[in-house]
Every structure is written in structure tokens, then in C-alpha cells.
Amino acid sequence: MTDPNAKLPEPRALLRSLFDAAVAAAQPALCLPPHLPAPPKGRTIVIGAGKASAAMALALEAHWPGPLEGLVVTRYGYQQPCKRIEIVQASHPVPDAAGLAASKRIAALVTGLTADDLVIALISGGGSSLLVAPGAGLTLADKQAVNSALLASGATISEMNCVRRHLSSLKGGRLGALCHPAQLLTLLISDVPGDAPMDIASGPTVTDSTSCAEALEIIARYRIEVPAPVCALLESGRSETVKPGDARLQNSAVRMITAPQIALQAAAGVARAAGVTPYILGDSLEGEARDVAKVLAGITRQVAQHGQPFQRPCVLLSGGETTVTIRDPQGTGRGGRNVEFLLALAVALGDLAGVHALAGDTDGVDGIEEIAGALLTPDTIARAWAQGMNPRTYLDNNDAHSFFQKLGDSVLTGPTLTNVNDFRAIMIT
Figure 1: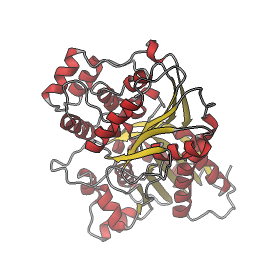
Figure 2 (figure 1 turned 90 degrees about the vertical axis):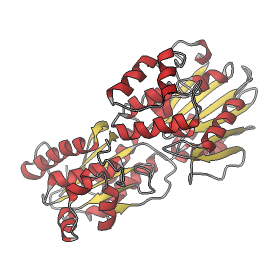
Figure 3 (figure 1 turned 180 degrees about the vertical axis):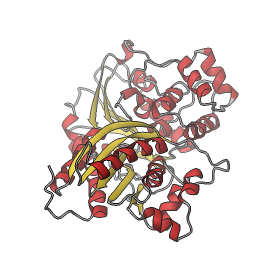
Figure 4 (figure 1 turned 30 degrees about the vertical axis):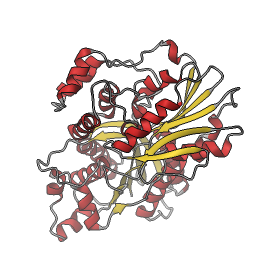
């Protein structure tokens, strides 16, 4: 319980320290080494994809006692100085030719191995776009069109990755199947609500229980316009993924090395040490960013005005992955799901005193820009109006990055080299 007589830390500084603690807890150098196996009789091949894959490779190199070779693909700007594992950079969230070339090389690396060999797959969020390998009859342009449409649709990450798995020649367990008969160890950093392995980077090395029919239903539900070859492939059923029980993945193991809950617990520890009681509301909150904001605004108001269900001062922590449906018909807004959440929270709270908040993506990139997120203060709305900025207009235009940048409240981290999804902290003093 918080000491009511204790001097509270400065809210902005404390919120930033909570975010930094969450990111630090998910660093591969800290969480990967305990999960490494003994070297095999044969070769050790390292493959991987994701925003954290290069940092994971560097940590593996530092702790691996025997021969090592391999290739991982990561986001531009996330390269690490590995000596034995090649690092290739490619585009995220929309795939590019560099990702396609790297994916082909990764597939070639694990083809023709023996039962004495070991493949270590380093998989983290962002791998869906980076490990781009179009299914039969599809092109890179088809995959780019689908990815862009999915990102603007409002579909959940699980739904998006269901579609992606069934349009790939490597995701949905297909890359894992190529490794057979070698031993396969998949090390995962989760960035998805619920931590389902098949949803992390669309599950390239694990089995998948979803179907082509489900992928088609998702496309229809969100009225997503996709190229004709995409529908043709899904309707044919020829792009089914590797299902549970498949013999090619019986000699494989999966280990979750860090996840959103671990990051939230680290942030909670920092808050507690600073004399502010933390409450973790959940590590897998989903839904439209502005709808989640309305719910958390209601809880915040209840705490601030009535001391229920928690006494102030306190900090409400949550993670997960919200979604954003693009409403601006011109698509000119600059934003991401975390800043959209924060702006919607500001609008919902209005001039409520004593509330500060931070929302950011733990990979350092909210949306497509090198901006992790933003900070909210009790006078955010007042400062915006003083500059002639209508908060609702910016929200309607999905332009939250512009809004917070003009106020000087953007959170910048640079590449964090990890990714355990959204981080939200609301401090009520």
C-alpha cells in the first residue's frame, strides 16, 4: 500500500522509467542464455526473423560454446555486430525485396540437414513482414498489398496473422517442416496477446490449427480488398499450414523466453520502489485503440473521483495489442495504435486533474515512424487548444503523432532491439 505521506516522484520521469524497465526486462541478452541447449553432434544452424532477432543472435553467439552459422532477418536499423551469424535488414511493416531474398536464403540453409544437426530459430514480433515468402502463385506485390490492407482494416493481430500464414510458403510451420529431420529449437519473444506461438511472426516453425476457410472469412468480415490470386489460392485450399501432429515437427521444442507479462512485472517493481502502488490490469488487452481508451478512462475516473477499485496514488499498467481502423479517407494521418489510444484517453478524460499517462510500443516504433509513443499530462487538452489544435480533429484523422509532437510530448527511444508489444501506464496522483 502506498504511504499517503510520502513524497511522490515526478510523474513524467516515473512513467518513462517504467517504460524503460519494461523494455530492459525483455532484452535478449538477459532472457535468452538460460534457454540454450547443449551443442549437437552435428552442425548448429541459426535462423530467425523479427525486430529482436539480431539482438537474440548476438546473445546466442556470446554464450554458444561450439561452431555456429546462420542467418537472421531484422528490421532496418536493428542490426547487431554478430561475427558468425549473418544479419540481413529488411522492411517492416510492409515487406520488401530484401526480406524476400533473405527468406529464400533461410529456407536453403535448413534444407538437407541430418538428425545430428540442430536448428535454433530466433523468432520475435515483426517476423511476419520480414520473413516474406509468397505462397504458390503469389508475388511480392500481392503480399505487400495484403499487408497494407490488413494494417488499415482494424483486424486483430491474431486475425491478421491467420491470413498471413495461409499466404506464405514458410509461415504456419512450413519453415519448421523444412528443418526435418534435424532437431529444432524455437526461442520466442512474444508480442501478441495470449502468447500463442502460432501468432508470433505468424508461426514459421510451429504448427497451426487455423484454416484457409478462416482466412477467407476474416477477409470477408473486414471487407479487405485483396488481389484476385490471393482469393484463388485460399479458395483452392492448397495453402493449408502444417497441422498439430505432423511428423516433421515431432523433433522440435518451443521455449518462450520473454513476454508482455514479464515486462509489466518489471515496470510494477520500479513503481513500487518509487512508492507508487502498481496494478496490472492485463497483458493482453485488445480492441480498437480508442475503445480501449474509453474503458481505461472510465476506470481512471473512478479511481480519481471515488477511490475505487484502487486508492490513489497508483499506476495502472496494461499491455496487449490494440488495433486502429483508418478513418481518414485520404490516409494522411501520422499515427500508431499507442498514440491513438493516448489521444483518445485524453479526449475521454478531458480536464480531469492528477492524471498522467504514457503509451508506447516496446520496439520503439509505433506505427511506421521511429517514435515509440507519447506522454499525457493533466493539461494536455488545454495546451492543445492554446495552440489552436482540436484534439478530436486529430483523432478523427488518425494523426496522433502530429498532435503529440506539436506539444513536445513524443517518446523517442531509437531501436530497442526487442518487442513485447504495447505498454500503457496511467498514473493517478
